Structure formats: structure tokens, C-alpha cells
Amino acid sequence: MPKNKTHSGASKRLKVTSTGKILHQRCGMRHRLEKKSSKETRSLAGTVEVAKPDRKRARRLLGR
Image (cartoon, rainbow, N blue to C red; front, side, top):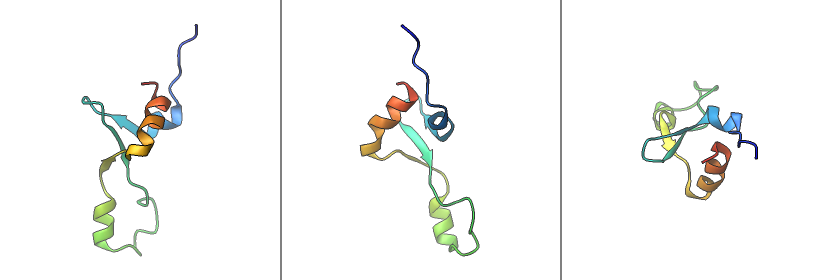
């Protein structure tokens, strides 16, 4: 039986922590940053956990 392959797009966007949480970057930080307020920019920065409804799909894409 062949090995399962990790979805290459998901592996670039998602990170699994040692405890098993799946983290991702928030969207909206690529362009048009001048128009966004500083408060909004700060809130979009950093990594957050994947939403509960999407965890199962994210795990499957990562081959876990």
C-alpha cells in the first residue's frame, strides 16, 4: 500500500505544535495595510489556532 502524501499547500500554511494544536496565520496582512487601522493590524498579527469546524479537515490534509 502506498504512503499517504501530505497536502503541500496545507503544509506551507499550517503548523502543528507539540501538543497537537494546529496553528495558522490570520488573513488580511498582505496588502492595503495603510488603510487598516493600527488596532486592526495588531489584532491580525501572529498565529492563531484553527477553528473547531476546520480541525478535522486540516488534520486530514496534513496526514495526521
